[in-house]
Length: 93
Picture 1 (tube, rainbow, N blue to C red):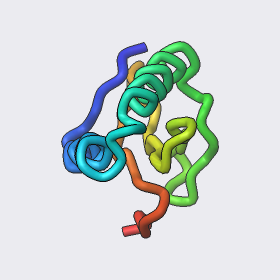
Picture 2 (cartoon, helix red, strand yellow):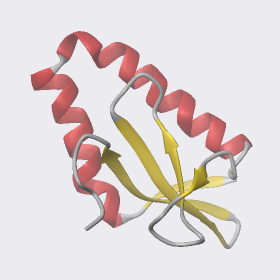
Picture 3 (tube, rainbow, N blue to C red):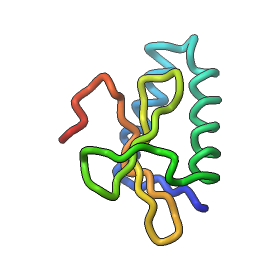
Picture 4 (tube, one colour):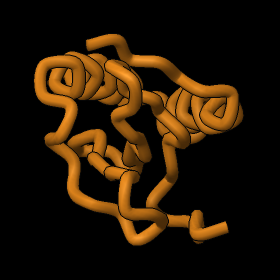
């Protein structure tokens, strides 16, 4: 299944990269590896995430050993990543 990062996830992707470049550079290699592993896992098993409180068709799945989670939905034969949230912040907005 195709994994698509929607425009709503762009600033989140920038924050993920910025966090590991400037705040926690010693975790960058491991976080990058986990980020890629999560993408592969979602492509193979798109319903792996747990249901979100945001909406009934939205799922959440953590990037293991990082403070980030993918917020996504499965729609029309593809996985749409809506957000990549830093779970330490209030992302309910």
